[in-house]
Amino acid sequence: MLTSYLIVPAWSDQAGQLRIVAREHDTKFRMTLADYRNHPDLWKEVGLVNSDGRLKCIEAPVSVGLDLQAQQPLLPPTVYTYNAKGEPA
Image 1 (cartoon, rainbow, N blue to C red):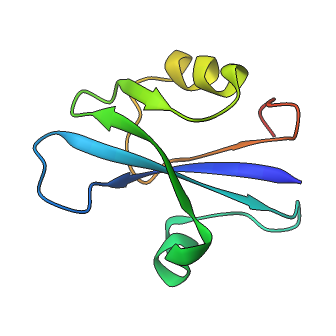
Image 2 (image 1 turned 135 degrees about the vertical axis):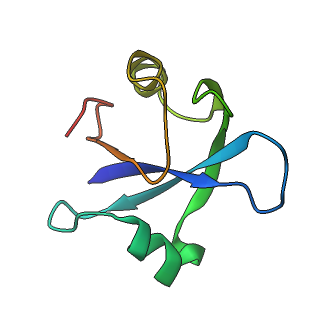
Protein backbone atom coordinates (compact mmCIF):
# COMPACT_ATOMS: atom_id res chain seq x y z
CA MET A 1 0.00 0.00 0.00
CA LEU A 2 1.21 3.49 -0.89
CA THR A 3 0.16 6.96 0.24
CA SER A 4 0.28 9.89 -2.16
CA TYR A 5 0.33 13.53 -1.02
CA LEU A 6 -0.86 16.15 -3.52
CA ILE A 7 -0.40 19.92 -3.28
CA VAL A 8 -3.65 21.70 -4.29
CA PRO A 9 -5.03 25.26 -4.06
CA ALA A 10 -7.11 26.31 -1.05
CA TRP A 11 -10.92 25.94 -1.25
CA SER A 12 -11.44 29.64 -0.78
CA ASP A 13 -9.42 32.67 -1.81
CA GLN A 14 -7.24 32.61 1.30
CA ALA A 15 -4.18 34.62 0.41
CA GLY A 16 -1.11 32.51 -0.02
CA GLN A 17 -2.31 29.19 1.29
CA LEU A 18 -2.24 25.79 -0.39
CA ARG A 19 -3.58 22.49 0.93
CA ILE A 20 -2.00 19.07 1.09
CA VAL A 21 -4.38 16.17 0.48
CA ALA A 22 -3.52 12.47 0.78
CA ARG A 23 -4.85 9.16 -0.49
CA GLU A 24 -3.87 5.56 0.17
CA HIS A 25 -3.84 3.40 -2.94
CA ASP A 26 -2.62 0.21 -4.54
CA THR A 27 0.85 0.25 -6.07
CA LYS A 28 -0.48 -0.20 -9.61
CA PHE A 29 -2.11 3.24 -9.69
CA ARG A 30 -0.29 6.54 -10.15
CA MET A 31 -2.15 9.38 -8.46
CA THR A 32 -2.55 12.67 -10.34
CA LEU A 33 -4.43 15.95 -10.08
CA ALA A 34 -7.01 14.46 -12.47
CA ASP A 35 -7.69 11.65 -9.99
CA TYR A 36 -8.21 14.23 -7.23
CA ARG A 37 -10.60 16.24 -9.42
CA ASN A 38 -12.55 13.14 -10.46
CA HIS A 39 -12.67 11.57 -6.98
CA PRO A 40 -12.15 14.28 -4.32
CA ASP A 41 -14.06 12.21 -1.76
CA LEU A 42 -11.25 9.62 -1.77
CA TRP A 43 -8.68 12.22 -0.66
CA LYS A 44 -8.27 13.63 2.87
CA GLU A 45 -6.86 17.04 3.78
CA VAL A 46 -3.68 16.53 5.83
CA GLY A 47 -1.70 19.77 5.75
CA LEU A 48 -0.99 23.32 4.62
CA VAL A 49 1.68 25.07 2.55
CA ASN A 50 2.24 28.86 2.55
CA SER A 51 2.56 31.09 -0.51
CA ASP A 52 6.35 30.60 -0.58
CA GLY A 53 5.88 26.82 -0.95
CA ARG A 54 6.99 26.20 2.65
CA LEU A 55 5.37 23.42 4.66
CA LYS A 56 3.28 24.91 7.48
CA CYS A 57 1.88 21.69 8.95
CA ILE A 58 1.18 18.09 7.97
CA GLU A 59 -0.49 15.06 9.51
CA ALA A 60 1.86 12.33 8.28
CA PRO A 61 4.78 10.18 9.44
CA VAL A 62 7.78 12.27 10.55
CA SER A 63 9.87 10.90 7.66
CA VAL A 64 7.30 12.22 5.16
CA GLY A 65 7.31 15.68 6.73
CA LEU A 66 11.11 15.80 6.70
CA ASP A 67 11.24 14.69 3.06
CA LEU A 68 8.70 17.31 2.02
CA GLN A 69 10.67 20.00 3.88
CA ALA A 70 13.79 18.94 1.98
CA GLN A 71 11.94 19.35 -1.34
CA GLN A 72 10.64 22.87 -0.69
CA PRO A 73 9.26 24.87 -2.37
CA LEU A 74 6.16 22.66 -2.61
CA LEU A 75 4.06 23.71 -5.59
CA PRO A 76 0.77 22.46 -7.03
CA PRO A 77 -0.03 20.02 -8.59
CA THR A 78 3.01 18.03 -7.45
CA VAL A 79 2.40 14.50 -6.11
CA TYR A 80 4.71 12.87 -3.56
CA THR A 81 4.29 9.12 -3.00
CA TYR A 82 5.56 7.07 -0.05
CA ASN A 83 5.45 3.41 0.95
CA ALA A 84 4.09 2.07 4.25
CA LYS A 85 7.44 2.82 5.95
CA GLY A 86 7.24 6.50 4.94
CA GLU A 87 9.99 6.12 2.33
CA PRO A 88 9.68 7.69 -1.13
CA ALA A 89 8.18 5.21 -3.59
